Each structure stands twice: as structure tokens, then as C-alpha cells.
Length: 158
Image (tube, rainbow, N blue to C red; front, side, top):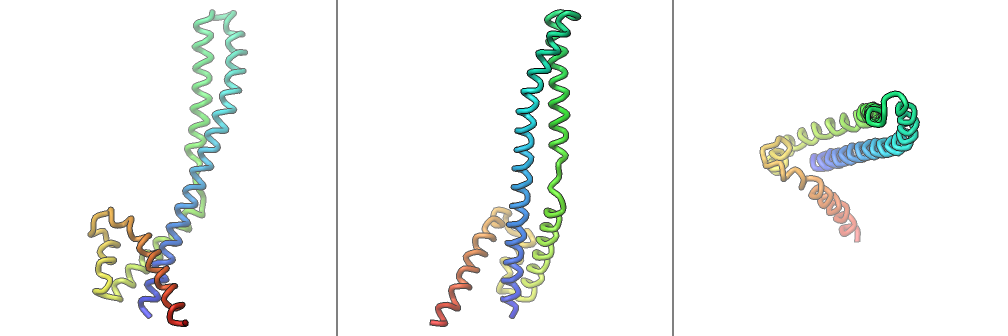
């Protein structure tokens, strides 16, 4: 039945979006954790290095230039760590989830074309003809529709 395949496509689309959000969240959380760990290590290390560097340069350059040189060294090390953290990528899981999302969306669009005028509103939303704020309603409406579809057979069985 066309409605069943439409619902299956909608479920796959919701699942793909959920996977993308989960993978992106885990990746961002990992990046933040690494940034924080790097921050703590750099702060302690730079404190110790700064004290040692300052004491050694104090004799050669005096108190002002010794402090400037120590601070510049600290900034360079911190910038290098932030560049390394910025280039961390999520991996192949996110690419697979995005491909799954694309296939599910294409299938959903094809199903809406087959079903016809009954789902013309959904077809318009998927093609971006309706204001983008309505796109945020697709997920909750789909979940309500899925819950309703699951409850309907139980009522008929009784």
C-alpha cells in the first residue's frame, strides 16, 4: 500500500535525522572535552614554563621584556592546540547518516508524488515552497501520526 511505504520512508527519515543529531552532538561534546582538557594542561604547563622562563630571562633582558617573551610563548602554544582541536572531524558515521537521510528524503518525495493530491501540502513543504518555519513541525507531526497509526490496530483488535 502506498501509505505504508510513505510511512516507512517517513520513519527512516526521522531515524536518519536522529542519527545525524546524535553523531553531531557526540562530536561536539568530544571537541569541547578536548578543548577543556587542553586548556587545563596548557594553563598548568604554561604557568610552570612561564615561571621558569621568566626567571631565566630576567637576568638577560630585565623584568619587562622577560614577561613579554613568556606571554608570547604561551599564546603560541595555546593557538597551536586550538588549531588541532578545530580540525577534528566526526568520521564516516556522519557521512553514512547523511546518505541515509538523503535516500529517505528522496524516497519520501517519490512517495508523495505517487500518493497525489492528498499529500500535496507535504510535497510543497519538502520542496521548500512553504515558509521554512513549518519544517520544524514535520518531526512532531510525523511522530503524532505514527503513534496514532500504532494505536488504531489495537482498537480494532478488541
